[in-house]
Amino acid sequence: MEYIDMHAHMASRTTDDYEQMALTGCVALTDPAFWAGFDRSSADGFDDYFHQLTEVEPKRAARVGIRHYTWLCLNPKEADNRSLARAVIEKIPKYLDRPNVLGIGEIGLNRVTRNEVATFQDHLDLAVAHNQMILIHTPHLEDKYKGTRIIVETLLKDGRIDPGRILIDHAEEHTIGMILKNGFWAGITLYPQTKVSPQRAIDMIERAGPERICVSSACDWGPSLPIAIPRFALEMRRRCHSERSIRKIIYENPAAFLSQSPRFTLENVTDRNGQKAAPSAPLGAR
Amino acid sequence: MESAPLPCPMTGVQLIDEYFIENRTRLLDLAAFLDRLDRAADPAVDADFRMRAFREAVRTLSGSDGDRVGRIQMIFSDPRTEPTDGLDQKSACGAYRPEKGER
Image (cartoon, rainbow over all chains, first blue to last red; front, side, top):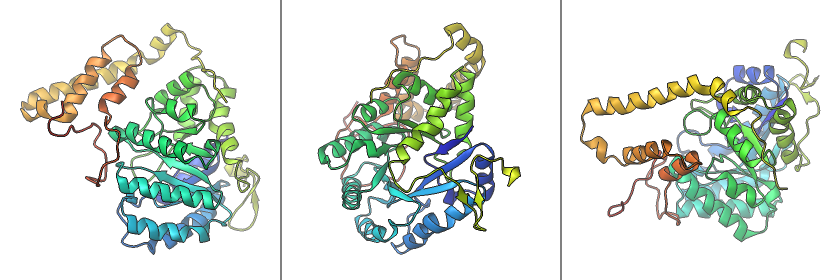
């Protein structure tokens, strides 16, 4: 079954992972700007990173027929550093016209400090100034409820951005309600230990209903699973949900959200040799 | 757009048939973790803010009031409403550490 991974840090993954995703039906993914696992020593490193996200990764993905899209920002993990944030945000506009850039993300909060909130606001200003869609990271573990609440309140108070063009990610049982009831899209990340299992994700979808919810692998350099979405689909089948319901969650919903960007398409991908590759064709047939 | 729930097509007994064994395993893992801590006989365990929250969560788990997962999420959550003044550490640790004088 075809699927779209809304959140996959492919700059941290191997070519084998791209291949596994293609073999299991991935036709497109979005790769939000991430933390390197250490704080960068200067803003200049972000030019290289944004080059990787907008030039290098789309070519790696196209080799296996996957469309690669990205979101640009300074990740919340480094957002407490205000001088770094200002310098990185200044760099972003020159990348926004690249063909695979969908918007600003994943912005948000990490430890919910005043500096992080100020950097989040700066990113919102950037998104508004350039009419960009937004992908939002919410904090993990004990910080999640407080951080999500402050993010939602900040967005509602701001009022400049249509909630329908914002996906608030890493939703869990205690935060998904406040995200959906205020008109935002909710993302559920399928990630071992610190995020959500397929079983819990399905519980949330059963309770909230399938509208405006996407699931993703959030795979990165940590212990994570690039093929988490097909495993989620398998779990939905195990629970006797229909193929129609599965397709809505793993393909139609992300396609509907992402299609608000004129850049997003599911038409044929061009591989590194400039040849068209049909995303739904079996890998061996190419 | 409002979303109607997507009810699980399985009956309660079908859910037990399908999921009992793996959840029995999870329960035993949990019990073994608590036994392991007992064997460690370290007085610091009982004072640890994470384990205090953990034991409260276990009590909630065995209750019958519904929405156990939502209530357990809130047991582990930071109850404060304002951003903090500075960054204390980079990563979360899984449970809220009460400030002096709290709890």
